[in-house]
Amino acid sequence: MLIFLASRGFADLIGAAGVHTQELHDPLFKPQECGEDGISRILLVLAITARVVDDAHARVLELVAMPYGRLIPDMRNPERSVDLEPREACKKVIHAQRRNFDVEHNDNGRPYGEREHMKHTVSEMKHISSSTDNARAEVAEFCAEVLIEARARFDLVKSIVELRSILDSKQLAIAADARAGIRHIHAGVQAVVDYHHHQRGALDGRFDETLATTAKYLDDVEALYSWLDKLYSRN
Image (cartoon, rainbow, N blue to C red; front, side, top):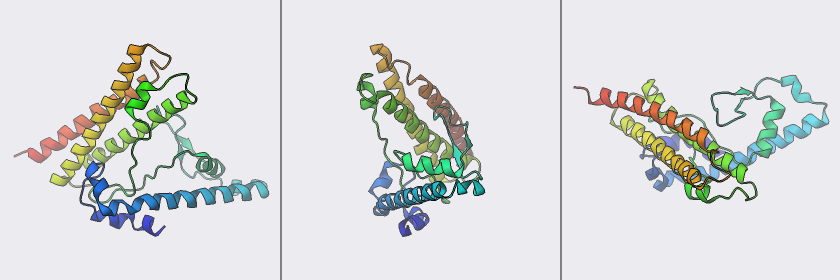
């Protein structure tokens, strides 16, 4: 918990740009790994306790039934979300296979907390067999991860455009790194789509919506970065 509370200070001290691989080599980046594990355990204990109390006392959580967040039912359409009530929020925490922490950005555009690597690689998605157990679940998880990562990088560039941070050489470098990340993500999904289209197997078409969404993020981030670059280089 102390590491989590100190994450703003750690973020301010890390010199590398956010979403840049160089940050992984900074010693101050390492404590956030165990900090995230600690917060996951706390969330899990609280969620289980709340559900037990709710079951034991005739759905007492309904007395405070206000939205406790937003739920995105379909990660292929991340813009659509619904209110998440307390009991359902606890259920999502308890049964989640993975918990991502999206907090805030400091003045340099750096997000607090650890940014994880992708769980599934392009190579795995190319060679996954439709007959494999949970193949469709793994494909859905890969697509959801791709959209989360692309959206995070797009939001980072958009935040600079919207004056969350004032443009300077460091902010332009942060935006360039984020744009490169989206380019990489889109190229990876394109490679998966091309492979399965060539194979004409059962997974052909499963990645098409994700490819279209990442292409939209790429087009939008290219336009935003071009605008920032023109502002910075204008005489």
